[in-house]
Amino acid sequence: MTQATAEGSADERLARRDPLRRLLVRPEFGALIGAVALFVLFSVTADAFLQTSSFSNVLYSASTFGIMAVGVSLLMIGGEFDLSAGVMVISSALVASLVSFQLTLNVWAGVAISLVVTLALGVLNGVLYVWTRLPSFIVTLATFLMLAGANLGVTKAVTGNVASDSIGDMDGFQSAKGLFASEVGIGGVNVKVTVFWWIGFTAVATWILLRTRAGNWIFAVGGNADSARAVGVPVARTKIALFAGVAFCAWFSGMHLLFAFPAIQSGEGIGNEFFYIICAVIGGCLLTGGYGSAIGAAIGAFIYGMVNQGIVYAGWNPDWFRFFLGAALLAATVLNHVVRRRAER
Amino acid sequence: MTALVKLTGVGKGYGSVIALRDVSLEVGAGEVVCVLGDNGAGKSTLIKIVAGLHRHDTGTYEVDGRPVAFASPRDALDLGIATVYQDLAVVPLMPVWRNFFLGSEKRKGLGRLDVDLMRRTTRDELLAMGIDLRDVDQPIGTLSGGERQCVAIARAVYFGAKVLVLDEPTAALGVKQAGVVLRYIVQARERGLGVVFITHNPHHAYPVGDRFLILNRGRPIGYHAKDEITREELTALMAGGAELEQLAHELQATGTTAAARELNEDARELGITDDD
Image (cartoon, rainbow over all chains, first blue to last red; front, side):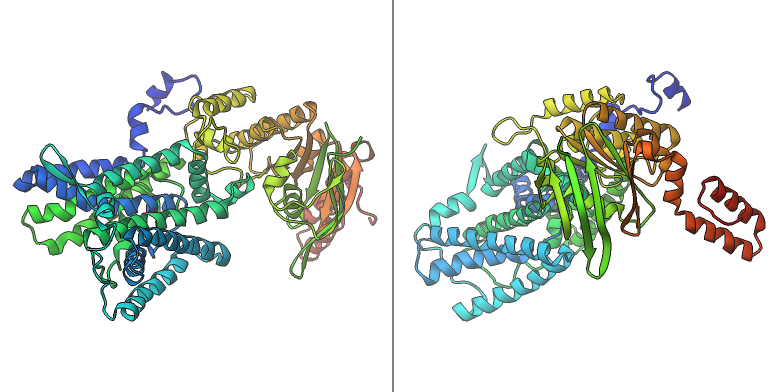
């Protein structure tokens, strides 16, 4: 140790930051190691895992959560939670479905109205958070409960049933399905279109985070909101926009559900918000905000998809799925904590 | 010459608490005004008003001769009033260069950050202040307190501040690092900036200040040019002479005579006692 400093730089206070150390302190690093380990584990134990068709299933499973994890991870880097994200996906799908069916509109009209309504829900979360100055955990817990109730109540009142009516034969359904829920053949394997959206969303989010002013602001409001405010960052606006970002992802996921399974069960979605947060946290987002990455969240979602499908291919009892996920979460948070202490030192 | 920043009879209350009352202050270009006071004297409230974080309730606040009432720190920044806070100047987990440009990011079309320019500028500006950072990508939380303070000052100067407001920049620093910061204050004055230097240490304030405003319990108890006041008088005002003397009496009563005698000596030396 002393030797290293002696022959090192002229200023002994400047620690050397070699490339390996740089990699080690990246937020995604722990998740990447975990992903590789799980990939090897399932490749060895489950023969079917490496078949292209089953791998396509893993990617699909990862993408449905990964798309949400993009919005949720940005929000978490911005220092906030959104517990209403899971039911908001269902709300979004229900709005599009009910509006199209009841008013006999082209489904694209329903899709557009749903986008407006869902974004408004996201902005509402943000505005409530800013106004009340309560922790977002509490504010979105309230909107989560209200949305969960409204999903059931409105659907029953309108359709007389707990599920929305099927819109599969309505105008515009096929073209909307093409955008939100189709399959793309690559080298003889059918890959769900959500996989490409997932990758696209992750790329855009990464670009925003690292290469735009908005990204700088997201890190700042999560890392130290008072400092950010003092140097002129519009903290309230940034946070509201982040809640709206989650809502946008919820809208997209809702549209996928609607066009993949034309009738929507109004009681679903509850609990999924935790899986989105788990993807983000496994991917290196700090629960306290100010640190993390969208790529990490994507790796987190990939881990989720691998565990979810891999257990089945390996012939293990799927009851253990949540156990594995919990263990992965614990390992990830401990690792993140250590990394953060190092980064701050 | 009109003052860059001029407060006249400014007051501020939080609910039933009057945090600041009837404070007047003037800073011109190339001037350092020191605001001294103990904890709870109203220094932070004053700084928040000047910085645009809070709005004053009474009195007037003029910048370049025009009355202002800022809605946010952004408004104050736009008029060239930059505030460097002791503890909330930076976001610890963000790289040095992102902190340097936070809130005033350089962009090159389509909303893209000009990362190379910002990295280079940060390195050069810090080098000009004598801080040689090999890696401006390291989290700013890894720098020492003095370095962080200097990053914040360099940043304010770079962004064309006309008035620098420094909130206890030397409070948490060792002797040597405090000296470094004081040198930058003098440098800023020589560049023609106005400086409002908040501190509770008269030994830091006296060498660099042109004028001294002393606050106690939210009220001004002295506003002096440097030639009207000696370092000893300033220290005495700061310490609140009467309180020091009272403490001596109390200590005497409880039997700690040695300490009491010492305090009395101090009080006499400072010329703030009338008995004995």
